[in-house]
Image (cartoon, rainbow, N blue to C red; front, side, top):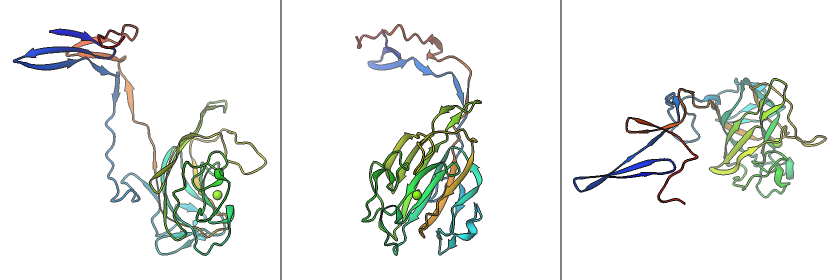
Length: 275
Ligand code: MG
């Protein structure tokens, strides 16, 4: 029997009947994790999973304040008159929403098919814009965190075609004094292409007369869809509230070698393979 102790594992090679079996010291993180809940996925990635809150499925805009003023069409809704905001407040979410630019819009720049996904009651905008043969400033393109960072790519489809936005938003955290503890993070995937990856927001997205900065706000706030005077179309809107996995610490991190407990001693790495 040859005994090696490595940085993370101790391995015993046991020669048994001509075969070699490895026994390892197994890392235990000391946390008793709850079993994650079952979720039935949709038939496609644009279909709401079983635990999603459906905000718009083509039938009505009842989930939104002011939603009655947007124009219902065959399976989609057309922006009109003003922004709409959800009646329900959300913190960290996964959002799915599909957007189509109006084919009849001959405007250009920020005036072409403009809308916005406004997280936390209008504070943080993910830009929605018609990018077809349309030039604008990069940090105002579709998929940008508006005037904070451009998207890494432009995968937008033509007017009249549907674009799928999938947004992962981690709400910011503030302490009791209102100081920022943790910034908001956002990831944006458009039509299956990741355009924003784990971006730490600098604060509220602004157009003019201000620098992005945080002002403390509640943990949960409505989601707003912007009306920017363009009759943009939306469909298949749903969110999932993101709850971190639950677990409680019941022990310190350690290793188990068979039924024997081995203390984790990072200051004593011993390995025959590493210098
Ligand atoms: Mg906008």
